[in-house]
Image 1 (cartoon, rainbow, N blue to C red):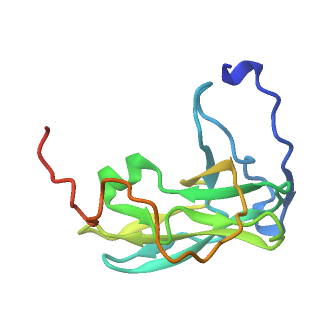
Image 2: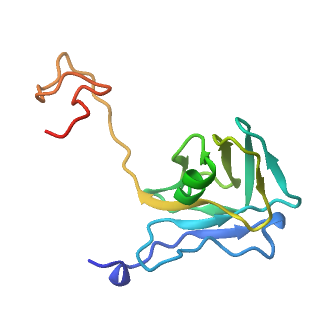
Length: 156
C-alpha cells in the first residue's frame, strides 16, 4: 500500500501563542516519514558547543490511542552542524496534552543559532502496542546470547 492510498491518522493540533504565524508540522516530500517542526522561539537562541536547550515547537497534540509521536533529529543539522536531539527519539504519549518541545544539543565545535521558524526536528506518528509482561523461569533460546556489539562490525 502506498502512502497516497493510506487513510491518514487524524492528529488534532492546538497552535499555542508562541506558534502563531509558524507553519504546522509538514512533510517536505511525498514519501517523507517525518514532518518537519519549527522553532517557536521569540528571540534567536545561541547554543554553545556541548550545551542543550528545550526549544518550543509552538503546539500541543491530541494523539489517538494506539499511537505515539516521536521527535527525531533532522539529518542535515546533525551532519552539517552537529545538532541533534537528546532523548531521541523523544516519545510523546497519546495521553499527553502539554506543549511539545525538542531537546536540542550542540555536539558540534561551533556555536549554533536557532532562529524563529527554523526547522529543528521532525515528528513521526507511529503505532504502538501495550503488552502484558509475564514472569517466566526461563526464556526460549534464540541462538543469540551476546549483546552490545556481539554480532561484530565486519561484513560476513
